[in-house]
Length: 331
Image 1 (cartoon, rainbow, N blue to C red):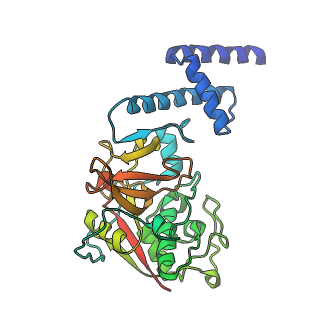
Image 2: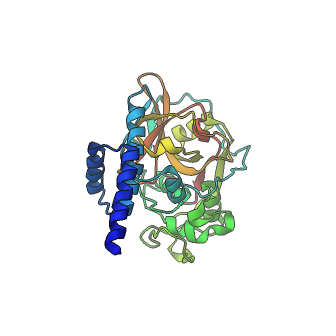
Image 3: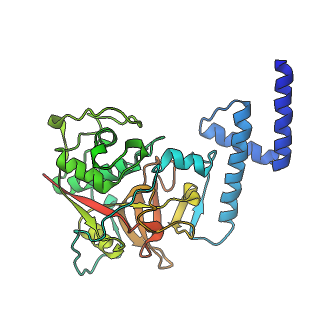
């Protein structure tokens, strides 16, 4: 009976493969990708993931054959549907940023044509990896506070995302189910600090709060929210002060981003639709005069440009100017 069942499954997969018209070359490429990313599947999962991978690769190839400002590529997510990816890596529900009038006071400039805080000194920690947890908001928060504190003190110390996952729930954050950097900064302000990554290491899942105020290493004096849709104020903050946290709407095409200036006609641009939080560490202008943000992500260095991406600046692309903030350090 077991042998007959196995034969039936194999026959069923043959029909599926035939229907999908997956070529031997595409199957070879999938196996090569599996080896590169240390993926192992049972028989049933193999053919399901082969199907998903092939659809994703065709999407990538079709996009790259056209005239676009950014290119796509295969990465560690290439065997996942966007629905699977969304559930694992994005905020489980969109976070509505309620601030319409922020506290950032802009100057008149002029500003440099380009700024990159990674090049200014030891002010930006290496790209981290959030894993299978919708905790991007914590990485945006720590990344910003790490930089702000380093600029103020000269000491760059990796800070704890796990403390925010476990302890910041009273500030309308939900651990692996989502949150906002501005609300996380509020938590740090009123809870007397944030511990280091070494003292409160990352687990990537919701746990009980183990915060020890005696081990706090970074503190927030106040939270500065930038007025909704005021992207010029974001430029002012990044040019004069420090990197800035922001949230935006990720759609399926962004999952495959490889390099270039990301733009999208699919994404939403309102504060009730943002589903991913990141860190703007600088900005610049392409040779074709397209302005962009330089953004640190939290999906590891194998994704994008060594973990970073560029996104068009000046158009509130995907709602990136709908909800931006940074902390004032208490040092």
